[in-house]
Image (spheres, rainbow, N blue to C red):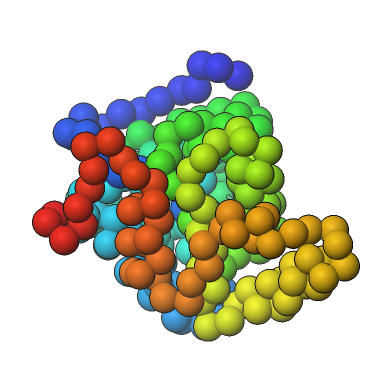
Length: 206
Ligand code: AMP
């Protein structure tokens, strides 16, 4: 569908950057996951950024969005109609775009963002991360993509990817398309700087 329903609550000035975050619709087993989601939401708000995410209130997604809104960020949520109830659509978003399909969701999330970051999550997060990565290698976009390997959460996935390189099904150039970090703030800074925004964001001056 090309005509998503939109509820716009505020029309703030243009944000310094727009970051798409993929993360779990569950909170995870350790409280540190929620703490980091909160830190990231807060960081986006404090740096006058915009958060683009899946539009739900569930799990890390809701925690991230609430922290961003509380810190004054614009938040765009993009959610398929079929998931409005299941993922508890966040009606407090600055804009909530209700779309028909998952494809539409991912397309809009990508179009509205300067960079992408995947936090710990489940299969939905994996799928979004891998699709954004494959779009990048195919040249459909040239926006930076980060993976937050919080507490080594993604270690075994990264090990497998390295195995795939060793077995000749992937190469180092593909691995070089993603930024991997264990700490949220340095990774956020790197992604925003790599996005090379016009009129650029100097994070030290904000
Ligand atoms: P999960 O990581 O499984 O907790 O899911 C995180 C988010 O990814 C949720 O908002 C899911 O609806 C979303 N998701 C799951 N599958 C897909 C998909 N194929 N395309 C886009 N988003 C998805």
